[in-house]
Length: 404
Image (cartoon, rainbow, N blue to C red; front, side, top):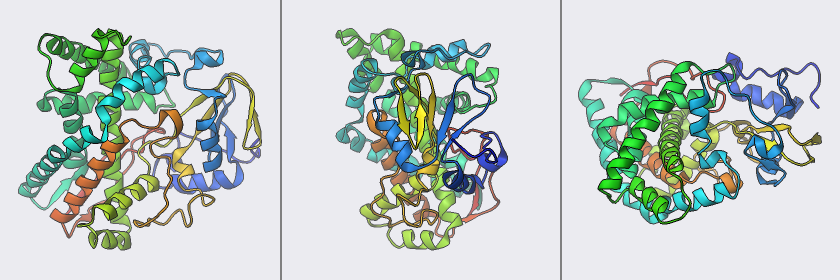
């Protein structure tokens, strides 16, 4: 267990703002498996790469608390969002997870993702055109990194792109719930209800008039006897919109900020903008360096030892991706942004059976978006230091003011 003098507060500015990775380094060195006080059962965070991977690989850990013998108390007023999340495949265990993933994976084949390349590029260029027309300064998060991914996932689902602003607001509130240690605000539950109602209406439209989109494909799966319930169709659509938006927004914004703070890496990448391979390698490093998703949780269903600590049935393990991605035991010189780093087996998209089903699409969006941004604005610079959203699970900027 951790030394008594070590303390880790997930809600502190030291963890949530720019000093996060310094705190992670201290925890890896002094308390790599740390038990968070105040929970009704042991909740331990794992800061080393090897320990995080061990939890994610082990069949001793599951995603659903009920499969480890306990139930999670639901905060007053949060039942609507809990019911919605209960249909998400990324929060389910086999066999439900296997069934849902098999259906959703059909929408994220390399061929399907590649078909979106033209739309992503056209949309990115259009957003950059609007930024350039407005002047010499912009909030990159609001004007580019935020709208692009939600427009792409809306296109994939078959939802109207003009509803993108509503999707962004809903997704952010659900992300607030997912990453809250202090209790989520009532707006999170309202967002879940509104988003689910929107998706039900869209489903009914597609039931009457199917199209070549993901919502129609999910409905076809529901009706063909693949045991996809109506609420699972709704939940899956909401999950893809939320996760597909939040992760890619953070990749583009965090990646751009990292490059602006590391001018040598920025110069090196600018010299390779015409190389798709170099851009792909660079995006992997941006994902490692400041991961969009920082941690997850697993429930122990059978006794096992990880990192020298005994986990028993009902205990909770929290692999910290952000810390694992800076572990010097896995990554040489981990605090250096090296846009040519290879190999790079980071955990930004998770690991094991819950590895992000949309990782290929997120990578493509990141490569196109960051490449287009650097080409359009060769003198891009940071106007002011940003702050991060108060969220332990997602590494999300509040804004990113840039000039060119």
